[in-house]
Image 1 (tube, rainbow, N blue to C red):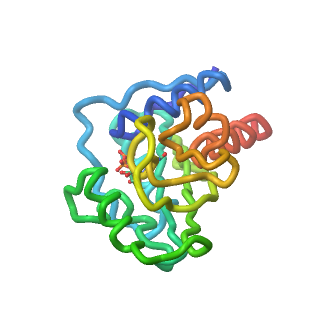
Image 2 (image 1 turned 135 degrees about the vertical axis):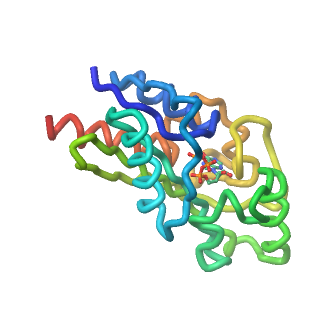
Length: 196
Ligand code: ITT
């Protein structure tokens, strides 16, 4: 059984990662409460994921795993991207960020509302070694919020292959079957399996 300390402070992400990784035989230890949040000041998802994973290795002396995710919207030249958590400002709520997104896309017609979620998962070891994998989910931004499940931008993100349902209209099991995060975690499992 492989064990990692989890670097994320986001409870929704934690739940999704646990659900996927427990099926893959990877155990997660909770992020210790006394580790301060890392300033995510890198310009790439990979940079921020490595920052978070390495901070947990430094704090615990154990191998750590971190997720950094962004929503890349075609009509906004890839924004909010790496700044997705802070799109509407430093302490913006999920709802503030979604409202800003819908506002910026008002008047953008069908066919031009394409977007993708990208997740980079980083693993860092006390030896200084590290690795990163990526998972992508393609879709489009809806005109209004739909659904109560999930978190963040889920109510306005309609994946290409869900029959018109947003991520927030999927059950947690359906989201985890084929999401940016679960795709990245499965890629990680493949790398760990073939390198051990
Ligand atoms: P940690 O850094 O502690 O892991 P965070 O919430 O700051 O948590 P990110 O910087 O990776 O995480 O997340 C960027 C934002 O993207 C996040 O706040 C959500 O608004 C959004 N997001 C991430 N994953 C998502 C998902 O699966 N569905 C919808 N929105 C998501």
